Image (tube, rainbow, N blue to C red; front, side, top):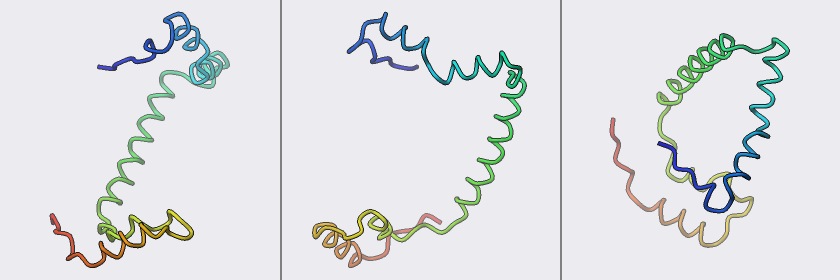
Length: 100
């Protein structure tokens, strides 16, 4: 069940007006009209993508878990003092339990 909160800040007329302008819907209608997309092609694309996603998910699930300190990597060029302190505290803790 989807809870719609758009009516909290906008009138129903405004929401409906913007729905008609949805760029994704408009593009799909245009592609259908030109014969470039169909329900069958959408279903085939969904099948291909689901297969590719399944393969990648399986590959990632087989990887070892990242180090806990990776949480701090690639966030700041120069980590602020409080994050350096938190990382140091984390590094002093015993290894995390595994579930394997």
